Image 1 (cartoon, helix red, strand yellow):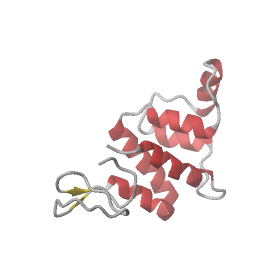
Image 2 (cartoon, one colour):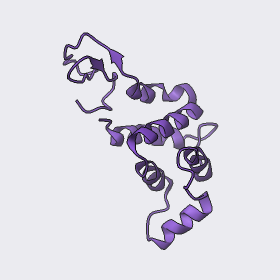
Image 3 (cartoon, one colour):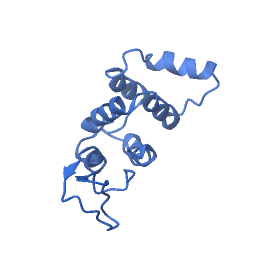
Image 4 (tube, one colour):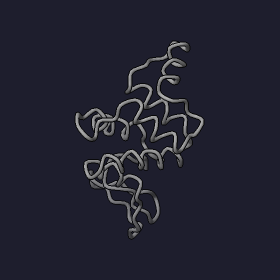
Length: 128
């Protein structure tokens, strides 16, 4: 199982960084609409949130939009966002790329393994 809080904590600063990697609300929603075609456009989505008394900060609604997706779709949506961010996002992407290992549990602090034969990344983004 993926630790989504870990992913969100690391992806948000990338989305906030000024320049080409900056994700405005409309840009974020356009990317996610490829995975959730029923998602309203930016202005309509924010108006719906205001009516419901929900936060309209990017950090909050970005997370809420992703949380509404099932996990497999969420992984694909985050990967699409990471594609737009480029190399700066490579260590987050590694969380989604299992690699075959000997099946031994590695207790080193920089590697997390599942029980069995899949190494699930070299970051603290996955539950064991």
